Length: 274
Ligand code: NDP
Image 1 (cartoon, rainbow, N blue to C red):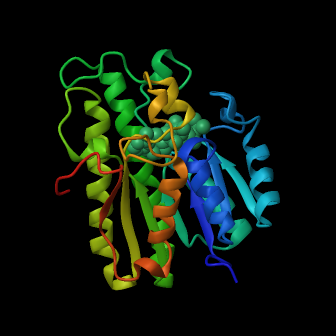
Image 2: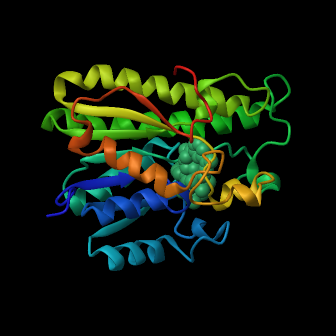
């Protein structure tokens, strides 16, 4: 019997990057998985796959589990409700929610210059449109999804929520300010959720990754080849699988008395209290 056999997981933003690897890892542990991207073919934006369906088929075939692709912009209330209804129709419930959708992607989107990372990206000069886009993409999506998914977990007195934050939300920055603020906010929102959910036995924790190699990470900044190694000095970049293993900790009995925490997965890049 696999560790997550009979569990249902929804990983938001799992069409590509970290989310896709997390979704596949949960599937490898036996979970039924709802895969998600903004559109059926947004997987093509950085050449990561032909379609969401293709990613779903790959994961289902590799791990012998049921995988349901759902799509839509999660800043939209009705879209969130539609996605959750589709998942419940197919699987009955959601046991594990991974709030992964997000990123420091401004109003031009992933296909824009700098893979969407705003060129003017500081605390004073960033455009209001980019501020709103980044806050919505990270904070609004997280809150809307939790509002739709969590009440049913509370009724059943069972559930596991993991929010993917960022070390950017744990210290001051001269750049990527809106992103840092948004991630600090999702950290705090998840802590508040954990406090509310304690009596229900529902867990809510945060993973704050450092520099994790994904196609969008590489497309949005200069990167160093010598740091793209799997082992050795922890000054290397991290890999999505290393985030996925931390997710496993938070959604299994390994963390049976752990909630409301922010765990950095950053190779020790930040070594001060959260
Ligand atoms: P990617 O850009 O590769 O993937 C982002 C995912 O989020 C995609 O599936 C995308 O969907 C989805 N998404 C974006 N906006 C929305 C929206 N409005 N509604 C629904 N889905 C949306 O990012 P990464 O894999 O690099 O990052 C994943 C998470 O990890 C993000 O929250 C990011 O902030 C965080 N993180 C990443 C780090 C890194 O170094 N890579 C470091 C720290 C944190 P679509 O494919 O349709 O565009």
